[in-house]
Image (cartoon, rainbow, N blue to C red; front, side, top):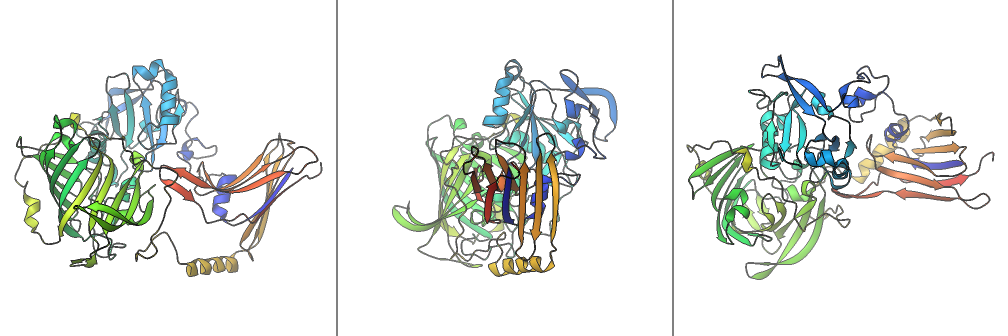
Length: 584
């Protein structure tokens, strides 16, 4: 059986799929790939999970010296490696609770079907393995969830040098403030007295995003926003400095509160005040961080919250900076998708108001946010004419459920002293038991209808889209500089499988054929968009029919519906494909 097909060339992607060599970049490939100078021994615990129930690692103190003491990390019911929706890097959780030990099938189901973390969808379960992170030289510590309970799980953290988003301080906050867990640094870089804040980024550089998914909405903790940032000049980007009266309804909680918000993203800071005016007690089940008469200050990576009813102030370190002014308008941020919804009407301040709407994915909670801009009146600001944000619908806010936020009486005129209201007040670190966790009860779930839609008449620049003229120039340059080549690779001996390829520079086309001795089954060849990707960007599938009849062959343009929305790869077109019988 022979399969022939032609497609415009994405040569690096093709060779990543077919000719895997020492230059591959699959996760941890250098530790397990044959021929790698860094390959671990076959009996290394990171490869085989150790002998029996536990593996050990020497306790690291603040100075990095090893001591005779050792901390045991139980394998329990196995591990689950997955891609973190927050950072887009590989992460791993160890199933250590009695529930998982007595029923490993439930651990595997959570890993591969439900997802070990909100938004995670690519879990790989190994019943006998310890997470690779425990053997990493930069192992930082463990986030212990449901400690001592039947559903106990341990997520291994790594602190990457010179990366402030993975400093011990931020990792602890991510675990305890957002994950509702308990951070334990014993045995890692964040052990007793160890770690601390990693070196910061260049604070003189504006427009830097928080890493991973968080960059979809947030500025980096050590950066700021200014007029040079992409699309800040758009009328739909809120001013660098603005304030408004607010009304928030927690839809599923039946709680309403009013307040005021001040944004100053030129200095990466925000103040928000609110008072609960409607809703059933106890408020500790309904309101963010268990308070109902509150002032919040968020500057760079630190959040302070004052409970005016009790006179108590608390402080938390956050892994993200403040919301950027144009967050909903673009597709920046790992795994996020922005969809322009067009014009509609909303009920605002007792009357129907003409607005334009965008929505953007919140992959961590498998949901999306919607923001509505005033189309009836323009707003004069120091940065020129702007469109006011009137309404925002937010999914599954921490401890709240879905919320609807309304903004009134917008202004850019206020005094900097508003941000000093908590100066001089002792704000101790928030107790880890008060972690807010995540709320995943949103009705605004991402579905297959969530596709990227850009607004063509909004004056926005999309950084990932090149002008057609430039694309054609680049294609012409490729044709003029590329050289013809071809080759053959035998991919299988037992059931013979041979790949032949040919690149034709004059048409910027890659032609290939597959030959197989197999009389039945199917053949597939895919162009992956990224190395190690499990979902191809384009694929051709050949399904042989019975002897003497026409073969069935189809080419597919992949449309992938996932947590980040539907992705259609327009980079390649399969021009032709044919299946034929060769030499019987």
